[in-house]
Length: 305
Ligand SMILES: C[S@@+](CC[C@H](N)C(=O)[O-])C[C@H]1O[C@@H](n2cnc3c(N)ncnc32)[C@H](O)[C@@H]1O
Image 1 (cartoon, helix red, strand yellow):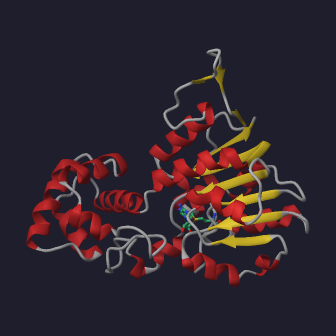
Image 2 (spheres, helix red, strand yellow):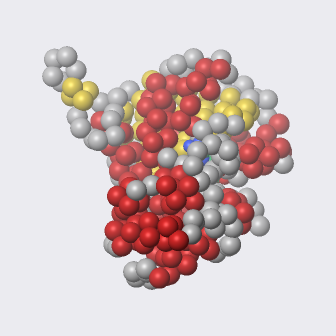
Image 3 (cartoon, rainbow, N blue to C red):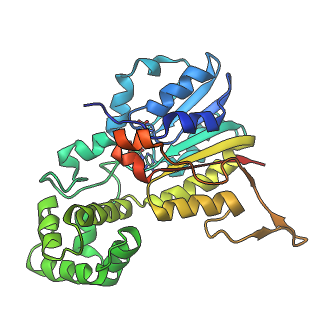
């Protein structure tokens, strides 16, 4: 099986408007599908910085022929450190021509049983993309307060019985600490509301997003992307969760995550972006048929003023 089937591949690269000789960032290398297409378009003189915080993605670059391109650099880092990492590579603020982020996890990560991303496999309940930084999903279940867990299940998991599940977690961990995916699946099965697979997916997604601070990383990334882009440079973001999409929409509309209009000294509304996509681009019927993951994908693109 391949590493990852890219979502909205041609749509996102077309909107990025890649030109030969430009400087580009793929913030989420994964299986390299988007990077490969960018490299085909930038020519010998162009540069591509591909970020991924997962060691597996780094190893994957070594197996890809396109990574021998002279302008390709893999950056083994969280994309929230975009500015620091690019400056360390000699890239100046305000000079990048385009950036793409295709959020979430790759199929490779989900299908690697021991990573603990999937309820389908018995494994340690880890779910960290970087394997080394931060708390595991088991740590969250074993240490967070009932209120915190409820917030995670309700906001990130959109569960209708978030309070019940949070209380069940707190009760269960007094008896036995959470260690494996199976421990969590068993507890969820006793507290199901609605369809089983959907419920488990929502719980696992919520814990994954919290363990990796995915919303926090996205906010940091977008702010630094705005600084690093050249005037006219484009930012393209593919999201898979309604909260992420709202953040991207707000940031592209107003320059902040809340979507509040920013004003200058004279009270005039300032907008740092021109919208390239007025509405989010979604996958075609053909793509959603072939790749179920693409069903929840939303692509938004904006150009720095
Ligand atoms: C959906 S996959 C990207 C797939 C890729 N576009 C392709 O076509 O193969 C997301 C990748 O981004 C990485 N990732 C997610 N959040 C990240 C972050 N904050 N910093 C760095 N890498 C991140 C994950 O480890 C994963 O490999």
